[in-house]
Length: 401
Image: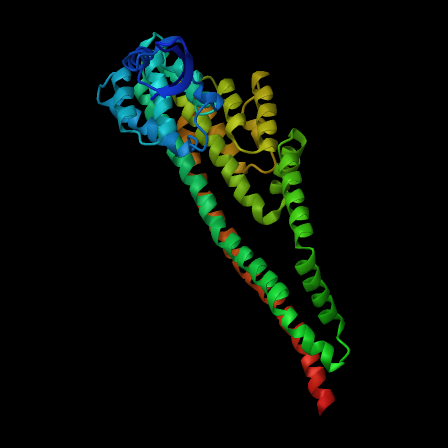
């Protein structure tokens, strides 16, 4: 439901201002009059600009996928677009998405097209969605377009979840390793200091190093927090720049164990997006411009734009794609077959299915590789700490003997 900011005058002539949600502007005015308030100014909050109440969860790509699936189902059963949106907004539970759907509903009521209503929320609905909806409106195939979009976003969301879930175990294992090391240095090591000092035994270098680290962490822990926080913020800020994004994304494509995952992910997104847009009647050049914005890698986006330039000059799409080192040769071969047969959208759809499965396989292999490495690393660190603590004890026993 849309949210409005208003200024109103009460019986005493005092001006009051606040926010209130209402289905329409007229409904808001009726609510104010019931409270003996007379509106002077009413303004709808711009949801896409972040004008929502703080701490409301944002609209995710998963929410967009669900919205598109519901809309496609209703349109395919013959329900008009305006009634479909009304049904969807009555069923949505997430406040922000409910407000966005309500805003689209109201804008269509005012005479805007569906695509123009979507344009008012650019942070939620991508150019891919808007361009395809425009194409569907012109061709009268909006039900088919929304079905295709729903499938596209469902598969993309499935890949996102697989990537995130695959990273959970390695991250938990790394976090536990760091936590155990800090616990031993801060709480366990100090219990041995008195015993080592009273023994008079000369401590070996590893033990002295650990005791120094323990003392530093206990005394100057805030410096470590400051340094780590500064590094995190610095990397995040650098990653937000164009140069930073290019360097970080290039690094992902250079690390051997990560390169295969990224290659499959980029290929799957490229094939799926171009296929979806071509199927809906969007020209190839426009499709490539859109895929460059959603591929999720700055290096790949730049290479796709360069390939688009080649296509605009009259070259086959297969030629520049075959020259992109991290994209599999199979993709260029499939594109060539699709161009020659006139079924590029169908060929790319099947290619996307194949590489989406490859993403899952390569992720499983990556996790299977990282697990023993992390466990070995954890064992080496803990083993070093334990041996460093035991070495002075062995020396004390030898001295007593």
